[in-house]
Image 1 (cartoon, rainbow, N blue to C red):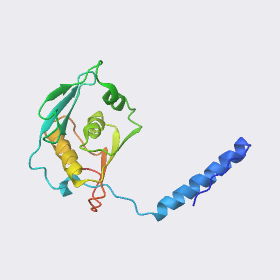
Image 2 (tube, one colour):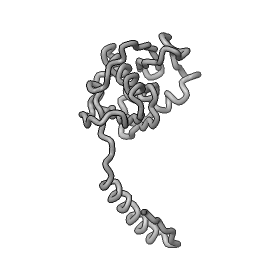
Image 3 (cartoon, rainbow, N blue to C red):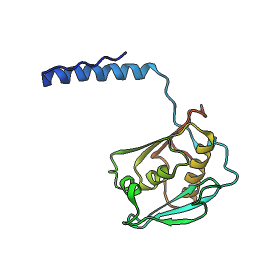
Length: 168
C-alpha cells in the first residue's frame, strides 16, 4: 500500500514525493503488465467497413473500420477548422509527447494518433475492437497514409502474445 503524506515544507514534500514515486515504481515492477501486441497476431476482419477521414488542415488521412451498424460506415468524412475538434487536438500533439487512447474501441482516435506520427498507446480489452483497429491500421498503411507503425503500441487483455511494437 502506498501512503503519501503531506508536509508543510516544499523541500520535504519533494522528498516525500520522490519516496512515493519510488514506491509506485517498485510496485509496478512487481506487477505483470500487458505487453504490446502485433496486428499480425490478430484475427483478420473478414467484413471491413472502411470510412475515410481526412484532415486537410494537416494534410493527413486515416482509415477507420467502423462496425456495419454505424451510421458513418462507408462514408468519406472531412474535418476542417470548423469541425475538427478533438481530432485537431490529437494532431497538434508535439512529436516528443505521447497520445494514450484508453478504451480505444475501434480505433477512431488511435488512427489519428498513428497518422500524426506521435507515439500512440491504445488500450482496449475486446478482440472485436482489436480486429477493427488492426484492420484500420493495415488499410491506412496500404493506402499510403502513413509510412510506419513503429509509433503505435496496442494493448488488449484478450491477447497474451507479447509481440513487437510494430503492428504489421
